Length: 271
Image (cartoon, rainbow, N blue to C red; front, side, top):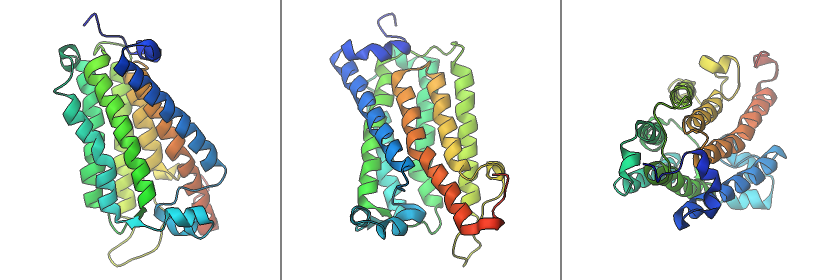
């Protein structure tokens, strides 16, 4: 256990072992890519999936190109999210005994796996009438899940020791659990907006939708911020939280604007 670095030591992995350097630079590259994506998304470009798929395709040649080949939404979610679970399955038997016997490491890995079991299996099975996802968007999401699944699972099973008794661990896991509840509750509300046979968009009500337009996005951001806190500020978990906020934060803003434009005075003023 003494040979394993603390969570904050992971920020120095650029001069660590060869695999520590791989994890370090993977995190740095992900952060750079998502900060760039943040600037693009905040400039008014919407990621072309879901309600923005056809809208984006009608605006530019690039967006039309992204939307030219669509994948069934349920299949896309399974394919793009499953690399995270594969990473957990592969990394666990190859992990260090000190990590595998650490309550903190096991709790964080369990949080990661629970989220992605929901995203890979439960969420797609419960989807109702979701719009197809462009193949390039699915492949980008899959690429992130491959890279992120590797850095999270490998660091938690081999390179970082998270003390279960550390003051950050339990509060961080509680924050993760709160975010997970908000996220799944919002998904439930969105799935049941329309009655059988109904089409079109409706204003969501209930849960945190009474206060924000993107309760599902807020929940996921809270989840991974809690995950980063519970890790003790480890680079991999912190990079994950930042990438999540950069990716879905602008989408939450776009959703709010979309609701205001579509429903105008019908939309609740307090959100």
